[in-house]
Structures are given as structure tokens and as C-alpha cells.
Image 1 (tube, rainbow, N blue to C red):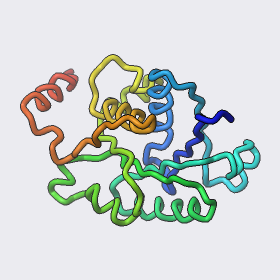
Image 2: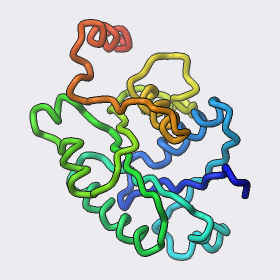
Image 3: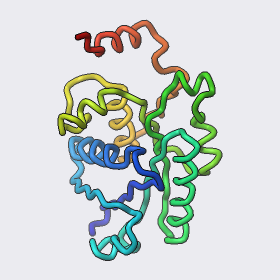
Image 4: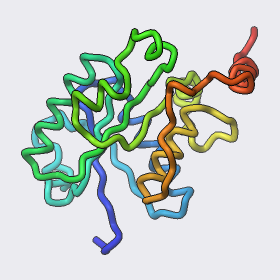
Length: 193
């Protein structure tokens, strides 16, 4: 592997938190930014799968743990972090997926600070809950390839830029969706039948 080559593991202890979606969209965003990119979707929970695929721990140099801001997902992510820590994989960074600012504001969902406090990992980014993720997945098209504007697409692109050491601020969910323009854009994206 070359001097500037990075191998990144996207993982979580829970199914359905968005590992595959994040992997696909980050891979596309990194490739579109000029990086030579290869992605592999493998279930980390299967014993010895890394050996069968030739991905022994000595190859994986860093990891991104993906979780949702839900207690069960955070608890499972904490277990995976323990496994990663015993495997000498560093750095380990955190992406919090499916963030709903309104639910955080009304304390119906763990806050970003809560999740970081529990997992004690540096935050690489957040991905806002966005119906466009479901629509693009059902079409078989990664969201980062779409022409449309989407909160989740912006988040994926921001995370990919931070992975390439660009100084891009992490979106503050407390400020998302508050402006009249944001509300208008959401209304325009809503399909009326």
C-alpha cells in the first residue's frame, strides 16, 4: 500500500444504523473529489470474516463507528469500540447517523453531546435524517450522486471532506431547519399526490 493510502473500517454493533449507506455515499464522495477509492461491505459481526476476505487487523488502520442517537444503538457501538480498542485500530472516529434536530431539541432523542460523552470518541460528523436517503436507496442510486439538494447529502460530503483533512465545520443540529429558506426547501421537496 502506498504512503498516502488509508484503509477505513465503517462499523457499528447494531444493524440498521446506516453503515452501508454511509459507506456507499462516502466512497462516491471521495471518488468524486479525486481520491482513488474502493469500498467493501462486510458484516463485521461474522467471526473470522476479516481473515476470509484478507482484511486482517494489520491492514485496517482506522475505523469509523456509526451509530444512531438511540440508547440501544449507542450501547452496541460501545461494545464494538471495545473490540476495536483490543485490536489496536487507531484512530477511531464517530459518525452519528439519522439525527433528528427537532427530537433532540425536545429531548426525545440523545443529543450529540450525550452520544459523544458515552462513547468518548472524536466526532467526524453527523448525518441528518432525510427521506431522500430512502428514496435514493430504493432507486439504487447513492445520494451523493444525485443532483438534488439534500441535508443528508450535504452531511455525507462534509464527512468525506473531513476525511481528506479539509477544515469543514460539523453541522449543528440545533441550527438546522430553523430558517424560512430551510422550511421552504423542505416544502418543495415534499411530493404531493
